[in-house]
Length: 136
Image (tube, one colour):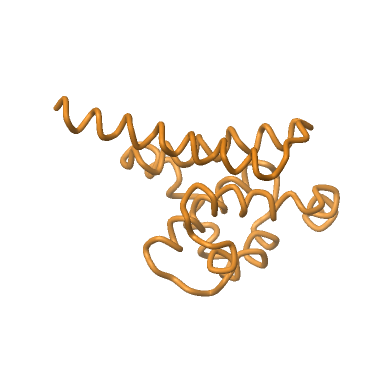
């Protein structure tokens, strides 16, 4: 069942990885590699939860990201906690989710324009964060 669903979704998982890569500045090849450092792991966590949200199964996600299924389950299980406890993760997740909704909704945007939209969202998030730091 998971294989059929992934086939129907085509290369959407590459777009998800690309969106997260653009937002986090972690290269796609590192996100899909077995490497594990804080930045790469955070990007993988975002990709796992975005792919699971749009219907990918644990096996497909583990193959795409070069991680074991236990890590997929761990990332998925801790997702709500990360959203509640880490505001920068929350901003990143919803900015990427919004960009993927645009892609998945059939809007045919030029790749460069899509990258710029993601960068603008990221800058807006950074601005809000800095503003909160200054005002508190």
